[in-house]
Length: 357
Image (cartoon, rainbow, N blue to C red; front, side, top):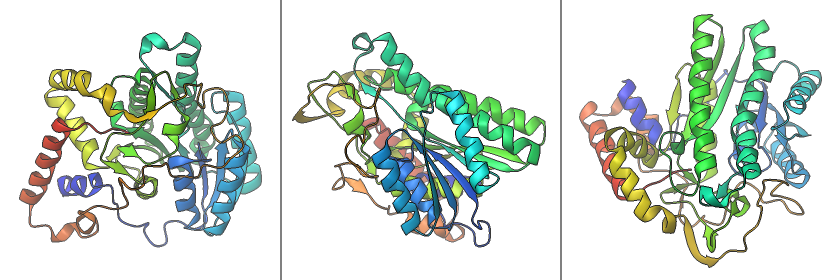
């Protein structure tokens, strides 16, 4: 049954929130001003939660707060750079002062770059690491300081297939995602050792249709793009909602490309090295010329405008999947044979086309 559940999860569609589990909980989402974080905040708000929104950009935060209220939740927008541990701690204290005990903390904040490592400065590499990795560490620490004394709470890390399989041009981001995975495993073991009723889980995502490809620092001649198959951020939000309600599982894989990438890298990592060396540069660029810039490294990506949750790859993005029925009716699957065929198909596809968040 666990294998069938994996098949259901990797399609990118998950079952709805269990009735009665969530009654206006206090949820913190970092990187909530746009992209996956924006969609996650809206999804929790749809359950009536009180959602604290952490991000740097005032325009995006203000719009995200309106989204949360429109969806039926209560919003608390807080301007925070998650690379600053003291700022994260102050934000956590303010959330509890205003809303009460934090029950779910979602680590999601992002900055990135699309460039060969030789074209990044030490300061740029450090900045990506401080936000995309240490921001998760600081968020987790702030959450645990409050959750462990109460012996209650859940931490959800937003991960990526790139936390298992590095790709060219994203060395800093891939390094951060690998680091998050190791950090998550270590913290999870500590929580299990103490038998705490505080849980940590991780959601590994595929390529997403978010504004991150407009915000990335790039030195390349053409505009960045995700590598298909691409999913809408609402798919990620559903997975995060499910993971928050079922946090005893160590991680969830979303999207067939995520499963294929992870399993493929376990089986034939050297082959993937050569394949990505040949295809990974062109696959991450469109045909449109790019004006190189600092992206969202040093300032928010939404300065002067709200970019919302979606990027400009909507025509290519999947809002659902053919396996949606399987994800909600797992008991009707005719044994493990069907599941094996789906996983094998995903692996084969991944060897032909690489997908990552």
